[in-house]
Picture 1 (cartoon, helix red, strand yellow):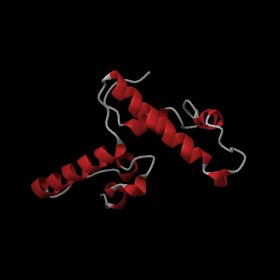
Picture 2 (cartoon, one colour):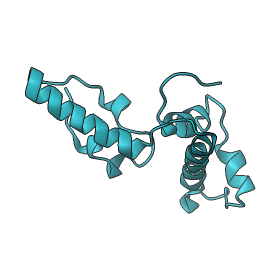
Picture 3 (tube, one colour):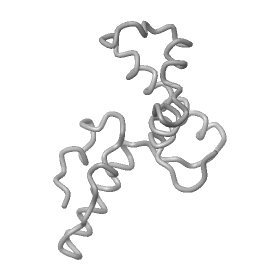
Amino acid sequence: PFSGWYMSTEIGARDLCDTQRYNLTEIVAIKMELDTKSITTLWKDKAILEVNVAVLHSFQKAGVTIIDHHSASESFMKFMEDENRLRGGCPADWVWIVPPISGSATQVFHQEML
C-alpha cells in the first residue's frame, strides 16, 4: 500500500501504528506479550520500535532501498547547512522534519527552523 520515497518511520510509526491509520500498536504489543494494562510499562514505545525494526529488516531483506530516521536527519542537517551557506536560509517545517520516534536523539530535534 505504499509508493514513493519513504523514511522507515513514516511507514513503521505513522502508517502502521497511528490510531487513525492501521493502528497495529496494541496488536503487536500483545503478540510481544507486553503488559498493555499499564502505560508506564512503555509498551507502546516498545511495540512501535519493533514495528520500525521490522520495516527496516523487510525492506533490506527484499533489497529495497529505504532510509532510517537517524540517517535522514543527518542528511537533512547537511542539506540545511548547504542551503544556509548558499542561499542564506532554509525554510523547513519542524513537525515534518523531526521523526515520529526518537526525535530528541536526532540533531534536527534541536535545530531551530523558520
